[in-house]
Length: 245
Image (cartoon, rainbow, N blue to C red; front, side, top):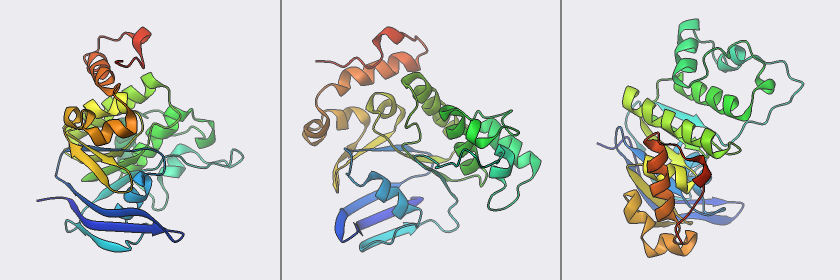
């Protein structure tokens, strides 16, 4: 049974149709990545899935009682606002010290409880946002370009942590990303989106699909091989970002 199933989803923003006829289903425990060019509707799709946007057409069916966790692209912070990490995690409802410590540890943010939110590095802030999403013990975790602004090694580490979370908790993961070289091999399935679903399948299938290559070119095969090389912990930073001709 799917955790969430989308049929014929269309979404309009400001009178413009952003998504048209999208079909999608997420099964328990799988990692699915959505890729697509800027303006392709990736963030809009996630916002519709969490209920922040109403469909213009189509349906979104969620498993009864489905627990969702959401990590946004970024968090706009007033640097003058004195807000510690532990207070941020208490919004909108207080959590126990044990819950807070567990979520921070799972997200790789242990020891940051007393730090000011505005003083965190980009990577630390993203791990705190992940911890907040984990507080509700989600069955489906949605990440909207959660590594935006991180360098490549930090992004790769973040996605390895996501894989480990899936293994430990059994949660399904739905990720939006533009970092094809890092994300695709971390996925069970890839959905290429450009206002509609262009193609879907295993990473290797999507990387060789004409619809995908029309959007992103043909260099992803080498990038996929690079990620596997890194993922096997044989790090060779001199070759980061290299693509096959």
